Image (tube, rainbow, N blue to C red; front, side):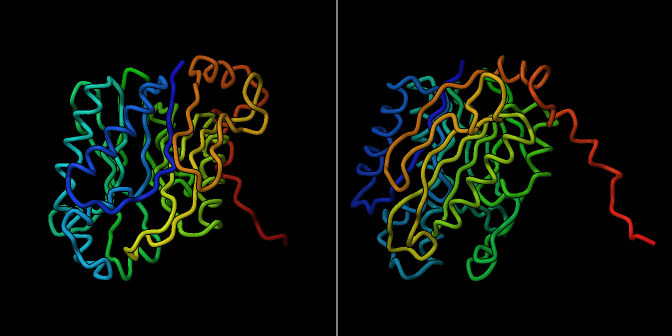
Length: 288
C-alpha cells in the first residue's frame, strides 16, 4: 500500500523567506505525520515566491522573473524536507527560464536527495499569450521505491496520448498538479484525471491552488485535492478513492494498492489498458 497526499493550496504573500519556509515546513510535516509517502503540490503554487522580491503584483513579467529567481532556493528547501521526512514531494510548479525559454516546471524531490523535474507539455492559450510560457519536453518517468510515476501538469492530463505514453512505460501512478481559475476548468482537469485512470487502469491524483491572489496568472483559483482509480472489482465504483471539498485548504490523503491494480488489469471486468491497441485501424469510412 502507498499513501498519497494531494493539496488544495492557498497562496500567501510573505514578508520574508522565513515566512515561506515556515509554511512549507508545516504543510510537509502535516502530510508526513498523517502517513503520506508521496506529496503532490499544485501547478503554479510557486507564484507566491514573487512576494519575496516585493514586486508590483500588476507586473506579470517582473513577478515571473522573481519566481524563477527564487525557485532554486525553494526547491532546495523542499528537497531538505523530503529527506528529513523520508517522503517524495512534487514541489509547487512555477515559471523557470531554461536557456531562452520560459517553461512551467514541477520538481520531483526524492527522500535520497535526488532532484528531477517534469515540464508542462501543452500550454493553454493564455499561457502562450500574453504570458509567453512554452511547452517543453520530454515526458519523464520517475522510478521510485513505490513504482514508476509520471507527472502530467494540469492541461496535459486532458490529452490521452500523453498519459498513454506513461502507462506504456509502466507508470501505475500519474500525478496531476493543477491551477484553474473557473469551476469549468477544475472539472475539465478532474474529468481528465478520472478518464486517464479509467483508460490506463492506473491511479491518478490531482492537486489544486485555491483562493485569490494579486498576480494576474493566479488571481482567482478554484479546485480541490482528489485521488482517482479505475472503477472495477474491489475499487470504488465511482472511481473516487478520496475527494477533498471544493476550495477547502488542506491535504486529501488516501492509500492506493498497486498489487490490486495489477489484479484488475488481469482479471477485472474490463481490460482498457491491454485493449487500447484495438482502437487502431478502425477509422470511419464514407458510406458509398
